Picture 1 (cartoon, rainbow, N blue to C red):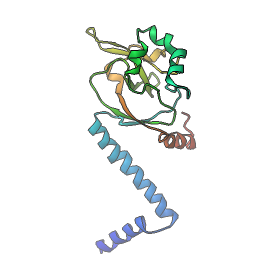
Picture 2 (cartoon, rainbow, N blue to C red; picture 1 turned 90 degrees about the vertical axis):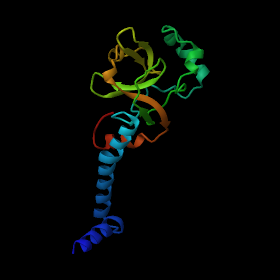
Picture 3 (cartoon, rainbow, N blue to C red; picture 1 turned 120 degrees about the horizontal axis):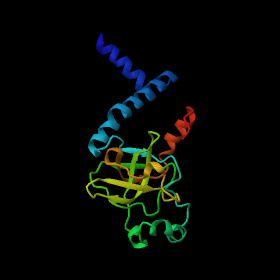
Picture 4 (cartoon, helix red, strand yellow; picture 1 turned 90 degrees about the horizontal axis):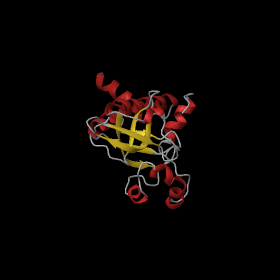
Length: 189
């Protein structure tokens, strides 16, 4: 009896071509990703947010080559004693774009030039490059978006408890699924 019901449910989920079967599949996929895959990946990578979608253009280099981008922005970095040679040693030297998906790793050590995700003052995650890293008794960092002239007020004196993780890998365009979904349900990003 129970075996028959399980077979019917299994057949409904995997073989039925109805709209209801499709809806149940979407719900099951959401539940699996939200409550099993995402937390498992977070545990493995040591962060609460193992994957984030980039929802702004603050790290974009506007489609120009590094040399041209550096000439336009070098003064902003030289003010922090960051040379072109040092910048070229950083991860994501060419920035990344709105709609990219970024894989994070929870790390204890944050270095100048690392791209980190941290909690902003509005409770939303922000992904920017560290430009100052101080550890003289007190740990804090300051960040700035590569496409921003200045640091925002909430990205000065960022303490360790506000840091979600360090950006390690970029998957182009995959974050657009999240952005489009949020726009579809009326959440402005």
